[in-house]
Image 1 (cartoon, rainbow, N blue to C red):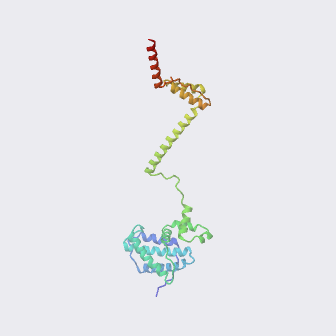
Image 2 (image 1 turned 90 degrees about the horizontal axis):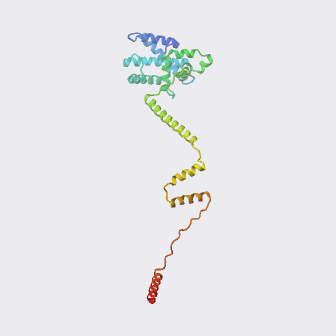
Image 3 (image 1 turned 90 degrees about the vertical axis):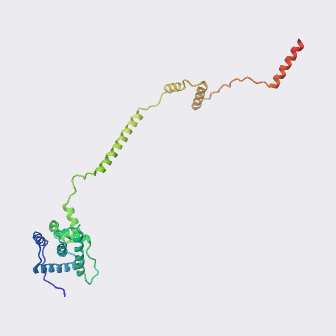
Length: 273
C-alpha cells in the first residue's frame, strides 16, 4: 500500500534556500529524516502531476519541480556528480530512467502523455534560477493566474528582462574578407560607370565640314576607282543619282573579215604594179 504523509507546501524560496544549504555541505549522508523528507516531496509531486495534467497551476508546477530536483539529487549521487551537467550523458541517462519511472507511477490508470523534454528543461531552469520566480511574483494577480506553464514563464521573463546587444556582432574573418572583395569590385564598377558617363557627355555630333574633312583624310592614297565607289555610295545614301561614264572600247573586227580585207589589198597592189 502506498505510503501517505501530510504535505506541507513550501515556497520556491524556501526550497532554494534548503538546496543551497545542502550544496555547501562537503558530503551528503542520507539520514532517516532526509529519506522521509524525500518521500513526502515525491508523494506531493505525484499529486501535483495528476492535477497539472488537467488544470495546471503554478503551485503544482513548483511541486513537480521540487520532485524533479530530488530525483536529480539522487541521480547525481549515483554517478558521483556534484552539479547538474546536461552534457554528462551518464548523469542524464540515470536521471531520465528515474524520472520516467517516477512519472509513470503518477500516471497509473491514465493515458496521459509524460512531460516533454522541453517542459522538464524549463522546469529545471525555474527551479535553479530564483530570478524567474521573483519576476513572476511582481506581476499582478490576473497576469499571474494566466502565466503558469514554465515554458511561457521563461519566454515572458526573457522578453521582459533581457535586451539585445547594443553593438552589432562582428562578422567572422572569412566573411569579412569576402565582404571586402565584394566592396572592391563594386567600387571599381562604379568608377568605370562614372568614366563612361563623362565620355558620353563629352561626345558630340560632327559638323558637315568635319565629316567631309574626315572622309577626305580616309580616302587619301586610295585609287580613283575606290574613290568613285565611295562617292557613288554616299550620293545614293543622300538621294542623288550619279551616272558613270562608260569607258570607250575599241571595236574588235571579225578576224575572217580582216583577213579578207588584207588579201584584197595585196591583190590590188599586184595589179597596179
